[in-house]
Length: 308
Image (cartoon, rainbow, N blue to C red; front, top):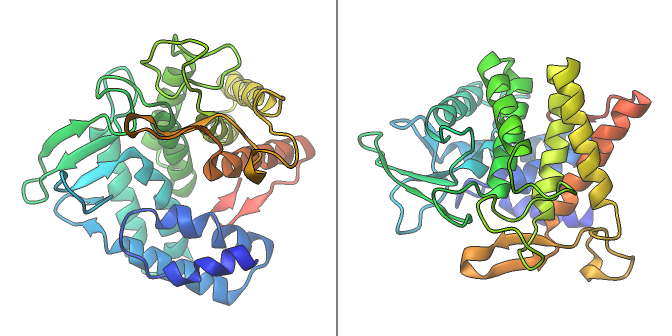
């Protein structure tokens, strides 16, 4: 509770697109565990603040404001749309849902390569709506698939299908899942290297956070799809969770700075957070485990965004 309360000061934060991560993951779970009007108000404020970054001419939410970009949109931004959808259903402006859907629609149209993988950064001209440039961002190259970016895409469209029931979102989530699972450089333990285009090897950094986000998304997607394909998604997620739960990634108590998982990669191209623990790796690992357990015991665990 104390750690969550420290974040109340950012309920009106408009400096970037990460309100869904910062408030949804914290106060969203606080609401799930202890429904409270104060928490609901903080989440609504966070959604309203995030919506100020919406560029109507583009129909998308601007991710950052810094150079060299004019109006950058990153695939990570899909993760923040759940906060908007929740707020629209819980006392916030109904237009917040329209913003979320518009952003998802434009991302679906523009953000993917022919092979089904997602770009990291697209920079737009907000006056014309044209795509000015595509950047590799945290990936190895604009032509390669940054691993965690694929996980954000998979999770984001799975979530947006849950929120809207739009068939095209489910189709995109399935397409991303199939493309990522079939990557030739996917390691046997299903914990990806930091970019699917880099040369595999013992010294090539892994990204446990990618596996954690993927596993959580695949558990939900397996239930949305059902049948043989859904079973394959669930089995892949189970294999990832087993790997992350093994001594190869799960740190011993009292080590790893208090984090659960080792061997994540944040931003390798700039030398940032290489082979380290990351808080979002731990978060989505725990979420994946909770989602999987809810299937096993039939509890139907709920989050602020709906049944998970």
